Every structure is written in structure tokens, then in C-alpha cells.
Amino acid sequence: MTRRAGRQPGRFRLRFGWHVAAWLALAVVIAVGSGVVLWQFLSPPDSAGRIELLKITLAVPAGIGAVVALVVASRKQHLSEAEHGRQEDAARREDTKLFNERFGRAADQLSADKPAARLAGVYAMAGLADDWQAGRQTCIDVLCAYLRMPYVAAAESEDGPPAGQAGYEERLVRNTIIRVITSRLRPGADVSWQGRNFDFKGAVFDGGSFDDAVFSGATNFDYAIFAGEEDRFINTEFSGGRVSFHGAKFPDGEAAFVGAKFTGAVVDFSFAEFSGGLTNFIAAKFLAGLVNFSMAKFTGGEVAFVGAEFSGAEVDFHGASFDGATVGFGHSLADGTRFSQGASFTAGTVDFDYAGFSGGKVDFVGADIRGGTVRLSTPGAYDAPPVFEENWHDDPPTGLHLPESPSAVNHGTSLDGT
Image (cartoon, rainbow, N blue to C red; front, side, top):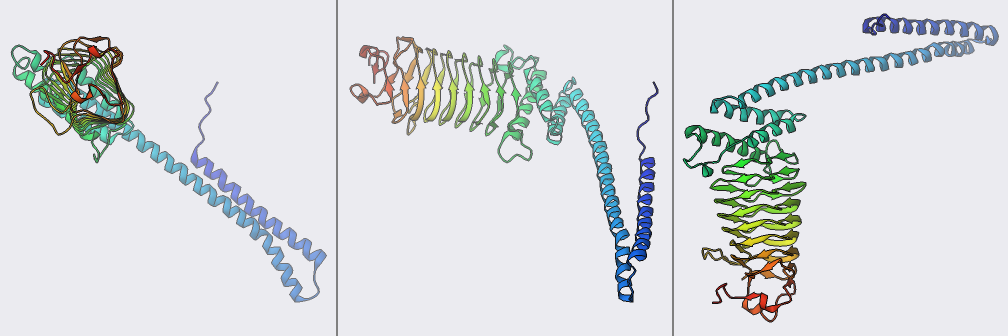
């Protein structure tokens, strides 16, 4: 079979021109014919009548000519739009080609041996994500994938940063990625990456700040290790989608969620491990959504919810274990630092069903339970009950649900009975 040739624009225009000429010729024939017929059968005796007859005769081809003119104008518009569409398609293809070339160069830089080249690759990939909306998620995925690559944090290395200067330089590259991501997640960013997906599963964070970022897409910190001296989420907002810290580890150091806002997202800390150091939720706001600490382990160190606001969210500590850790919902930290107010529970529910309290201290002294619900009625273990206000002994707040056995509750005393 022979391949049928495509339609050629020049030949099409030629055929269209012949069609227009044919329509005009037909208009002339109709005009002459109608004029002869009208003159033959309706020839008026006076000059005025003849003039009217002539007007009628000329109106016929004029109408046909107007129709032809409309057809011609419509076809020109169609051809113009088609040409404009072809030009736009060509421009898009050229833009995509250029974007792909930039992507390849940035990816090559990220895989370079020299840290300066890798740093340049970070900025090149971030700049490409800003410019290339269709490929933005792909660029973000590459930056996240870099953070998921094997890495030994300085705190985990016996001799300081791994491989000396090289380890310090790699830490700089990784923290630069965190910085460029955070800058685009903050309100008022020139180009916003909010609503995009971020996959940090298994990444090792050796410091770095997500301060003031807004996570509103699917964000995955599953099994991530926050091993830096300070990993920060200060005033970070989790406002939509799902943010998961499932199985994440917070060892020695400080993970600061100071002033963080949970305003509608599902935030999952299930099976997370908090051991040593300070995990700081001071003045955090749990306003809506679900925050899940089920089966989390609090071993040693301190987790502080001092001044936190629970007013609408569901916070679930189902099956969590508090073993040797200090967990504070009151108005003071383990080092004696005192604040003007403890955590406030004005709505929503904080659920400790089947949680194990065996060692350490869980402190509610100074907490304000007015309208929310704190459920401690069915603990898994109660060897070291939480500490409450002394005046709660006979008249606990309405929202506080304790075990049925009064002897299991520690009322305003320390664990040694003083």
C-alpha cells in the first residue's frame, strides 16, 4: 500500500480560492438571470418602477457576496488560529527540550564528586523546579531522593563528621537541600511548592530547619532519623494531606516542634522512637485533624508539651510506652524551667488507652482541662502514674478520665512519695 500524503496547506488554499471564485461567478449568473426574468415578466411602465426593479436585481448578488465574505473571513480566522496553535506547540516542544537539557545538567552536577558541583546542582534543580511547572514534582523528587541516599550523621560517627572534611561538606549539601525546599514552602514565597509531595522516607537528617514551612501535600518522614544536634520544625504548619513520621527516630539532640500547627492534616508518629535529648512541642497547636502517637516509644530524654493547645484535634497515644522518659503537659520542664501556663485541653480528645506508664514521669501539673477530654481510664501499665494537681484528688476536671482504682493514681506527689 502506498502511504497517503498529508494535506498541503498551499494546495488547500488554492482549492479554497477556486471555491470563492466559483461562488462569485454564481452570484453574477444569478444576478443577470434574475434581472432578465424580472425585467421580462415584471417590467414596470415608469422609470421609478424600473429603478426599484434594478435595486432588487442588484440586492441578490450583494447578499450572496456578503455570505461569501463571511465564509472567507471565517476561514482566515480558522487558518490564523491553526497557525497560532502550531506555533505554540512548537514553542512548547522547544521549551520542553530546554527543560530536559537543564534537568540533565543539574542531575549530573548532583552526582559529581566535588561538593561545590553538588551544591551548584542543588540550586540548579531548585531553579528548574521554579521555572518548569509541569516537571516541578520530578525535580522535587530528585532533591528528596538525594536526602534518602545512605549517610552517617556526625552524631553517629565516633570521630566526628564521617571522613572528616568530606563529611562536613556532604552535610552542607544536604542541609542546603532542606533550606531550598523550606524557602519554597513558606508563605509569600516567590514560587510556592506547597501542596506538592515530599518523600523523605528513611532519610538521615543531620540538623536542618523546616521552620515556618507549610506542608499541605503528602509528606513522608517514615523511618527517618533526626540525628542532628537540632532538627527544627519551629512554627511549621501541617495543614492538609498526610504527614507521616511512622517509625521515625528522635535520638540524642533536640527535635524542635515549637509553635508547630496541626490544622487539618493526618500526622502520624506511630511507632516513632523518642530516646534521649529533648523533643519539644512547646506552644504547639493541635487544632484539627488527627495526630497519631500510637505505639510510640518514649525512652529517656524529655518530650515537652508545655503550653501546647489541644482544641479540636484527636491526639492518640494508644499503646504508647513511657519508660524512663519525662513527658510534660504541665508548666515546667525537667530542668526546672517554669512557664506561665501548661498545656490547655479545650476541645478534642487526647487518648492514652493501653499506654504503658512504667518509669519516668508524665506531668500534668498546671495543665488546663476545661472542655477537652484526656482519657487515661484504661492504661496498659500504670506502675508510674502521671502527676496531677493536688486539688484534683477529690474533684478531677470533667474531661479527665482516670482508672477506676484510686490507688493507681499519683496525686500531686513525686514517684518516691515525697
